[in-house]
Every structure is written in structure tokens, then in C-alpha cells.
Image (tube, rainbow, N blue to C red; front, side, top):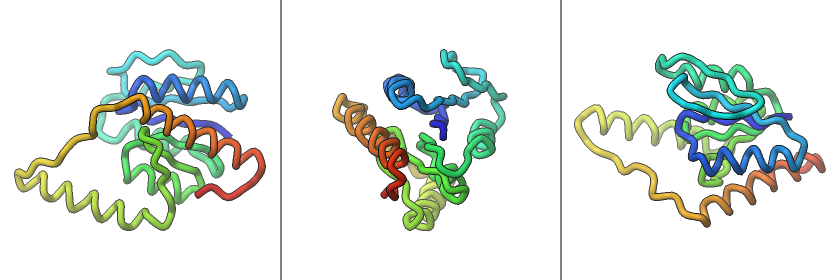
Length: 151
């Protein structure tokens, strides 16, 4: 099992939490980002700057039982389909029964933006967001340790 981070849009605090929790549970942490980012990690992969290049690399790295950290709903759907667990940087767990809804909402928002509309970005990150993320990541790792289902 490994933790894989889609690091292109990942807050630095989440990256630090993943590295710390990964050490605590002896779980390797892989980071994938375009060459525009300077990330210090034992397992860092730098990809080019082409559209979706980092997502494709994350998807190819992910195996059943891995934990993937991403904000990208499309990537979340693909790694869940491979049997990986998936969290967003706010600590939200992506579940298989939500994938269809997330992809539909993603398409609706993209269509709205293509038509000139504007959608809100993420809210400013707070300390409680980091705490929630760390708790959910640890819960995920602990459940895997005891072979419990993750929901």
C-alpha cells in the first residue's frame, strides 16, 4: 500500500501531513507534479506540463488498496475504479456510490464555465481543515491495517 498525492493543486500543509502520517504508519508517500513545482519527497515524480499528464501518472501508479489524494473528481473516479481509496485535501472521502453524481456535476460546471459563467473556487484553508484531513487519512490507514471496509 502507498499514499499517492496529485501534488499539482495540493496545499503544502496536506503534503506535510501525508509525509508525517506515512512515516508513522511506515507507508511510502508518492508525489506527482508537473515540473512547475519544487517538492521534496523520497518518491517524487515530475511530469511535463501537458494537460492531464500528472493525473494520468497518478492513475497509472495507483493499485488496489492505495490511498490517492486529489481534488480532481475525474481522477478520483478512475482510481476508485481500480480499487484505490480516495480523499480530497479537505478530508472528504470519495465513495464509489458518489462517482456518477460527481462526474455529472463536474460536466455541468465545465459547461457553465465554457459558456462564460464563473464558479467559486475553494474556501480559504483553515487549521481545522488540516486536522480533519489528518484524521480521515489516519482512519483510512488504520482500517486498512485491520482489513475493515473504508467508508
